[in-house]
Image: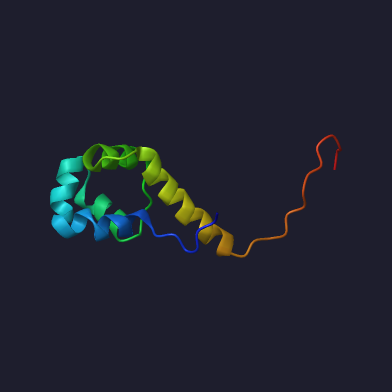
Length: 95
């Protein structure tokens, strides 16, 4: 089932852990820069695989969950953009 406008993982962070502690405090716990974590929290940067691993270690759960949230967000927004028509390739035939 496709989600309608899935949230950016940063909004999940803002609505949970960043209500309990500052970005600076959480960034220190994750051993990442405050700026990098702030950019994710504000939806201006994506959750990387490395950050997903650190988030899972700090908050429980799995890195895959954070990556799935990011991919769902990215795909939904990519599908909304205009793109040129792409002709399907029929394998076994030379174009």
